[in-house]
Image 1: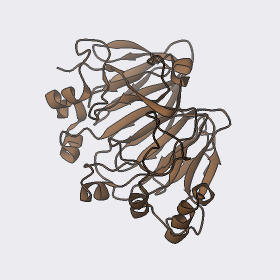
Image 2: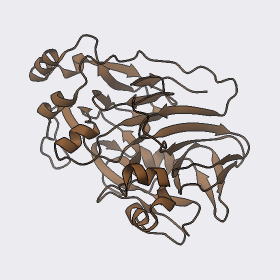
Image 3: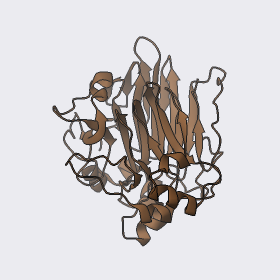
Length: 346
């Protein structure tokens, strides 16, 4: 039988826009001599997999566990929907510099173009911002011809909306949304298990190999949701002392935030991935128990009950899981919008 709780060891990805913030803030064991932009906390993506950190399955990749345990690991409904293709990818991103202005395709486009089985829907939870911002959606009235002309004249940023962000803000990014994470922002990201990114503008800068990074203008213009109604920033109010909020409920993932002072019990029909935001807690299954610190991620197999017991004060954490069925409307923040941006939670 697979253990109740699996501490995960991430895969680190170098990026020209990355930094050393993940070691400074969370003590991540980053490789020396390079800028790390991404810590892939839960990943079954080929050649970029996370592995089990400790215990009887230490060193096993997530794909190996999927192959061996199937529905016992992921949940029966997840296997029925996605087969043996693990559906999610969970990251921590450290943007020392601006990311490219970009867009992601949906599943239909990815499959029709032979680019893989998953498009890329994603959501961010802002872990830290030093006066940073995000690009999110096109300005009102910008059409395809306007945007194409802006690309040709290096005016892409003039066509995009920008929002200041701070710790606790949440941004839901459906496929087809022009967006960018900007400098001095660190986020938690949950997304489909895909690395499909179409770059629109990259500031004419070189990549880690010294050569300009590829742009994907034609594909971007194919998938951008021109004319889509983009919501104005929405503000979460104080939730009347509630320790729980559903941040995103979409076709592919459900993201929840908890802030607790006493033991909190959980059980999910799908697998659950828990990432600690702040504080320290004991994570307890029927057999396993681990001390969980800020920045660490734990994988819990489907239908395994577990509890989070704070150690010395409040602990806050995120849990990503997979909905049982596709809801069909790509619901976003709290199931209310096709795209969304929300401000600080209680």
